[in-house]
Image (cartoon, rainbow, N blue to C red; front, side, top):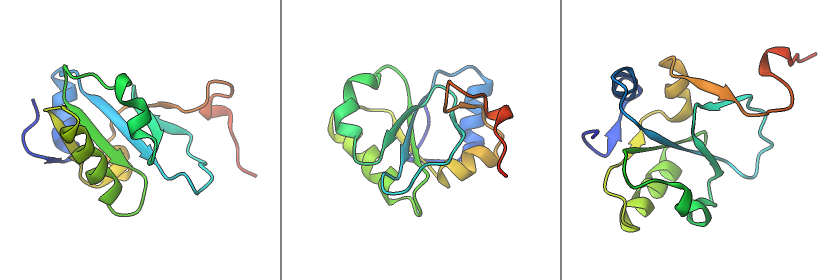
Length: 123
């Protein structure tokens, strides 16, 4: 179990290093074309207004870490609070969002299954 509502990427990294089964919910802004190549490994990746349509995909038996690529942390906090209201007990907001996740060197996977991220070039 993670301590506190807000968690840092370093705390998440430590828990992953010890093999703790964390679930990530990654929120993306729905009005901007998404050019990202990566997501957090194993994350449920949703547009920031679709969380309620995907509640059945979020387990109750492990800590849930919510973060976003949106400016500020309001969307992540709102989503985490919604999960708490809907019955999840171990829910946390990642301080710094996806940028903090990446800066901590946490594991990622390709968003697209059709073209490996290592083969994409921007001209």
